[in-house]
Image (cartoon, rainbow, N blue to C red):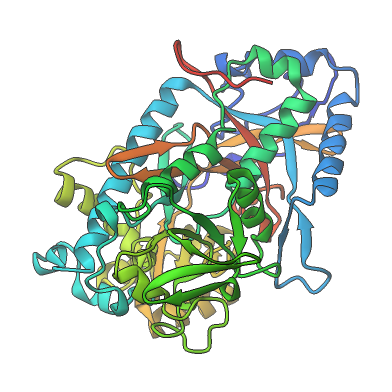
Length: 505
């Protein structure tokens, strides 16, 4: 699965409204999700390419600019803390949707449901008996050295053993069209609000195409989210009060926090708005204190409760963990889930699936070298120019070395880090990621994409949003899709099978 050499070929543009939907567009040896190797539209993308071919010259670009203007007016932004030129950015968006067939989506959905069941069982185990460690399936050293393993959470019993209520699992597709799990996001996964806003803008700007394409809906995500939060509140409560707990306006995902609070019709609160009395959580209101039963928290674990975690935290609520342990309030996601999305622990998820479920993984991991293992580390250090190397607890595209695009100086510096702290690094082959046509100037060019579907877990029920956030590497040749690294997003259209609900305008 090495990088296809044809990546270095020049890209011929597909004119945006030239009367020929394919034009001189080249797949360049990559798996293209809209066009097959013969240059023919894939069946699920035929309506899309027909529309593009019928557009007057410049029309697709006009609609692209109209959507960008709408994003700015709607205040759909994110924050890049490291950008000295200014932190508030609109989320870059591309008008050409990603289209996934129903049969492919059914496979993805089954794999995600299997994976989240195993991860919940792992978290229940690792914060209690640690049987998976005792039986030698997972090295004890990995748990003891994991920055995200919280000893303060030992013995916790979330209702129905659901730790991961909301999950965002990152998927990639290789040059055969097969999907792989790149990583799990189990703490405060963000981006779902962009999925809904992308869909709203696409419906508005491409109504005829949307109606003709039998796309499954995503607009019911807030309703599913609210229903799950209510059901996972303390079972003694009939009409639970739900709140969204945010670090505040300076957080990079604050737009999303306020968006979902508004969509669900619940209060958006900060730590200073909550108080714990007699092991119950209350919200300060103009009418006095109101009991809170379920907190959809968008604050990192270590800031949740200064009595238990960071004593200097002003973002959390003193006594929150006491109320949680007493069963008087629920937290989504449960504290401590971060240990299951450690990039080293990730390498053992296939083993977890076999151990806890007695099943083979449906969605495979990307093959992963764990630098703590002597043989793996030796291989990584000898093949750095071929691999993608990641720090175990970094996110947002930071802390990554992409070997084929790196210099010897960069590789040498990274090798020193690996030797100093091998536990902190994993490496993976450089996949030939799939591409989707993307507006570049006045033409369409292939750009690499990944996919983050959102999974809601409620008791024995697991619901997967049909689609998710497609992130696109807008820079030519780039494999990094994160918005903080210059990436953007696309609307993701899952084709509805017979009998399935279809999104309406």
